[in-house]
Amino acid sequence: MWEIIRDLVVGGVTIFLATQYLEEADQLAGQIAVLDHGGIVAEGSAAELKRRVPGGHVRLHFADARDLDAAARTVGAAARDDEALTLQVSGDGDARSLRDLLNQLAGASVEVDRLSIHTPDLDDVFLALTGQPPAAEPASPGRAGRPDGPPEVRAQKAGSR
Image (cartoon, rainbow, N blue to C red; front, side, top):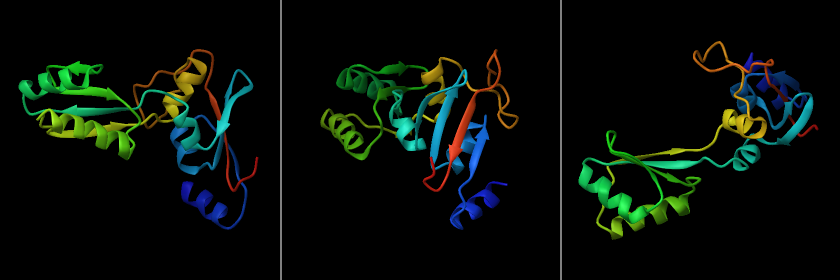
């Protein structure tokens, strides 16, 4: 179904899609309006909406506790997990801030084993805007549904508003 919608949009057709599945909106929509209790609480592209929400971070993984300790002293404010040997540093993961972080650690002779970058997704956006988790999706077991009914995401393609 997603491929059919994409093909129609490429052909110049504007699609108005109402969905409670935020991944679907993220994949298909050029413009998204988030509704809560019948009113629009935000609108924009998926990327624009994600930039509005804090919560992005870089997770640094270390080979040993010595490097974790040194990194925690060097970086300062970060969430530490001694068991997993990780440090979670707030940030959007853009190239410049990531380079600065790694240079800071290298300057302190701290060896990072690997890293991962988390940027907010539309689930994070919906939660931040409404205070409610998105409805459970059949393909994603274990996600909490909203007690007063599913959220709505209205998505438009091809520049139509």
